[in-house]
Image (cartoon, rainbow, N blue to C red; front, top):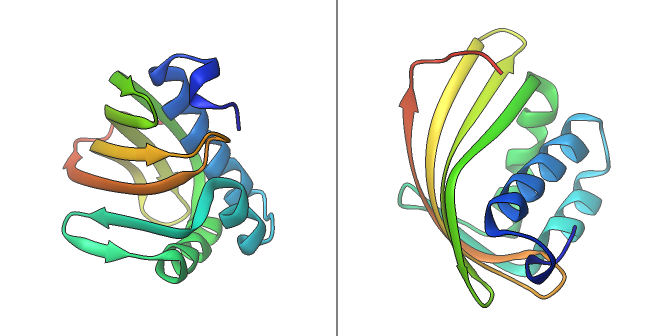
Length: 131
């Protein structure tokens, strides 16, 4: 991962989620994916659900099995030091479920080396337009 300080906030967020998804889908060891993208003490609150490292790790397995195509459209992002606020849309295709689109509002904190330390995300489903 490229550090946040070395790129724009929009590119950083797009690269972070693209790298995370590519690593997961291509079959990299889940623990290795976690180590590259998250700190050991990561906390993510997604739509009110508290996800620690173990719960995020468990989430990688269904992504690996089900996602066959994706893209991230980052509509806007701002950074202040290690903190990022962004609005993006995840477009995905799954093996059985077809196309999905999810709008994500993200408030996160990242380390100097680009790993996520904590985040709060609010999401909503959108009509899919294809990945």
